Length: 289
Image 1 (cartoon, rainbow, N blue to C red):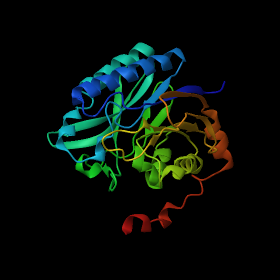
Image 2 (image 1 turned 120 degrees about the horizontal axis):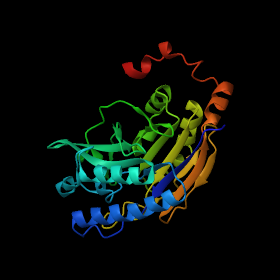
Image 3 (image 1 turned 30 degrees about the vertical axis):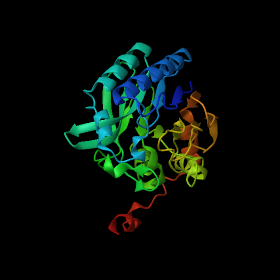
Image 4 (image 1 turned 135 degrees about the vertical axis):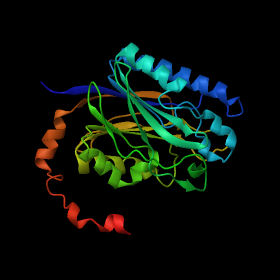
């Protein structure tokens, strides 16, 4: 019998103006996502991933300490506790991208992974932190991740997480495959312009090179007052053959659902023996310069 896992991605626009109180924005975005999570449950979704920093705007468009107030402990903060209850309610694995506080003044861009029974399985911290103009001032907010590239054994599949800018670096994508990932989720916040053409190029390439499924998530809309560009959505799933099998629009809130046949992983790897034919003993240059 085939191992088919129904998986979902949520892309969403900001629910209210950034001029509103931060706590009000956060609550509004959480409520918006709870409605969409319920929709996913009605469609039989078993694994669900939300966009990068899902409960707020992409605040890295400016450098202001007021946004530090969005941090929470992981897993002991209120949002992850709520997601644990939600996961258990719907018997659904949930990947939630939040702004994590490790200790006062030390913050990470983090995705928590919660199993279908509500158990917290662990977290991934974004490794590669961009800092560039216009509007991606992430080093002001985040310390680089320090937890490696874990793979989480959920009730339905072994999953890994790579966050937004990470997708430009093939090294971690390969390690996730070596660590046993069957599906890799990439919650993102990326705007139209220079990197848009890479959106449907890099991640299918990771899927092919490593023989796993990829779920790529991007938010939608523009976020004033920054207006750094249009978050163009186009969230999608692709197969280990690099084929996009389900994709959202570029301009509206949407739930993307796809049935992923995990048996395809072995089929592909039996043809393309990339793991067998690797030569890691010849790659020292990658880490020595």
